[in-house]
Amino acid sequence: MSEKPVLYYFNARGRMETIRWLLTVAEVDFDEVFLTSRDQYLKLLENGDLLFQQVPMVEIDGMKLVQTRAILNYIAEKYNLHGKDLKDRAMIDMYSEGVKDLNEMIIMLIMSPDPKAKLEEIEKKAKERYLPVFEKALTGPVYLVGGKLSCADVYLLECTLMLEEKFAGILKDFGNVKSFQGRMLQIPAVNRFLLPGSKRKLPLDQKTLALAKEVFNLKF
Image (cartoon, rainbow, N blue to C red; front, side, top):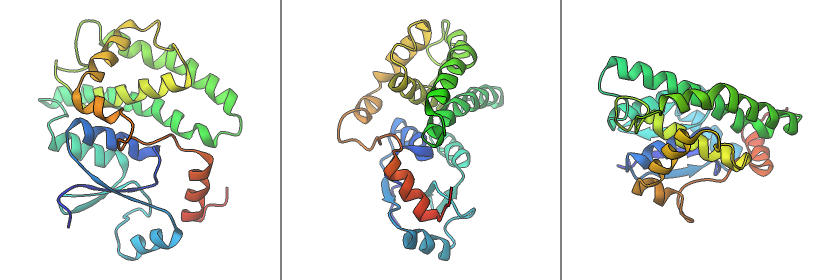
C-alpha cells in the first residue's frame, strides 16, 4: 500500500477538489486514480471499497474513507487544522459549513437547467448572505478562528477563487476577504498549487459530466 494518500475520483474538481486543497496546504503529497470507465467503478464496488457506492474515496492510513466531510475532518484533525479546542472547532465547523453551502452551488451549476438564472442566484447569495459573514469575521484577525490557520481558511480561499472565476470583481466590496485571500496566496504550498502543471483541476465540464453518468449508470 502506498504511503501517500490515494484519491479516487474523476479528473476534475467536483467534491474532491477541496480535499486536494486541504492536503496541499498540509503539505501532504498524494497520488490519484481517475475513474474512466464503469468497469473500474464496478471493481471498486466488488472489492468493498466504496461504503456508500460513491466517490470521493481516499485511501489513507490503512483506511478507505468516503463521504467528503468525513475525509476533510480526518485530514484536518491529522494535520492540526481543526482548532485548538472544542470551541474553536465549533466555530471552524460553522464557517466551513457556510463555505460548503456556497461551494456546492458552484459545483452543481453545470447541472442547472437554467445556468444564467443559477449564476444570478449564486452571485446574490454570495454578496448578501455569505461574504458579509466572512468580511465581518476577518475584521482584524489574520485567520477566521483563533489566530491560527485552519481548514475553514483553506475552504474559504478555494471558494473565493471559484467565485472570482465566475464573477470578476465580486470581492471589490469585501476588502477584508480580499486581503485574507492575498495573505493565503502567499503560503508557498498554495502558490505552488496555483501554478500550471500542479494537481489543481479544471471545473467539471460537460465531457466529465457525461463520463460520470456513464460510470454510475445515471439516466438524468
